[in-house]
Image (cartoon, rainbow, N blue to C red; front, side, top):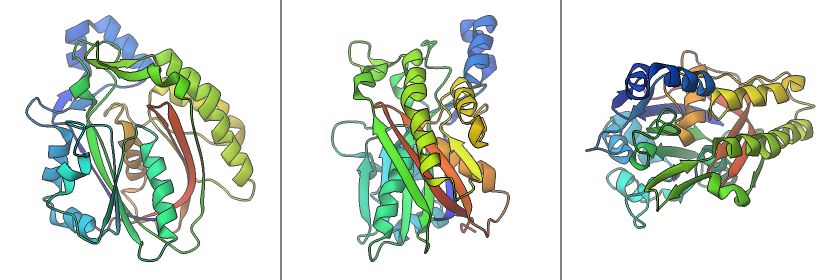
Amino acid sequence: MKYTGIEIFFGSIPFTHEKLCDEIGKDLAEKIKDKTGFKNRYITSIEKDIIEIGKDALKSKPLAKKIFEADLVIVVSEYVQGIIPPPSSRLLEEFISPKSLVLDLNRGCSGFCEALVIANAFFKMENFNKAVIVTADNYSKIIKRNNRSLAPIFSDAIAFTCIEAEENDTFYSNYGYDFSRMYDLIYKNELGELYMNGAGLVTFVKNRVIPKIKELIEENGDSIEIDHFFVHQGSKLIINAINQSTASHDLKAEFLSEDIGNINSSTIPFLIKSKFQSEIIEKNQLCLLSGFGVGLSFCNVITNIRYRNDYN
């Protein structure tokens, strides 16, 4: 696929490591940083949410043009103000073309890769050549600031990833679920906030995600050479566990989220942009992408990426 631009916007309030030290004590804050790898996070203000930040971003003419020209727009988000309407209605009401097909995907950190699977299927049909995947999460609205397990981890972010179909695309994927572990990351009404069992998530990654990453490589990787390995940045601990397990395949995922925190479904767009934004990629780069989280669900994709920022 040709990536014609990725734009990412964060919550407006920095939640720095220094602020965390002031709130919970330096010793505990340092232990959390060493384990998660996160130094800084960004959260939305009380007055504004991530969808409104996205609407402000769409006032940029180049980005609005990309949305308007898209044949397919997929909005990946768990953040809703109510049961109805879906996030796309709030975000796109002023910017969408009548010819565009708009889909809402209520998914977590696996959502970007799942949206790629959907886009790839549509690209095989007539009249579907351009797509925008919007990933938007606002966990700070459902996490209390004094929650020592979650507040030091998550940031609020929205990303717009613009892609186009190319002939002879390479695209392989696998995906799966473990709904028996749905309670390891869940909004609990009785608590009035998000609950996470970190140990359960690590077990899920080790028992379900890593074997499927290996399976995708072994089924499709013998005749191809993977250039980059982009993995959801759940924590530095999880990235290290994945790297240890895939070392025999000469693959190593980088941990690049120290200064932004866990941005959920926008993580992989952030990684792609971080890797390619300073250069024009004329040759396809074969990339392995892995997203996993709420559900619990995962989706792994091997795809070619040619990044060329066409905004300017």
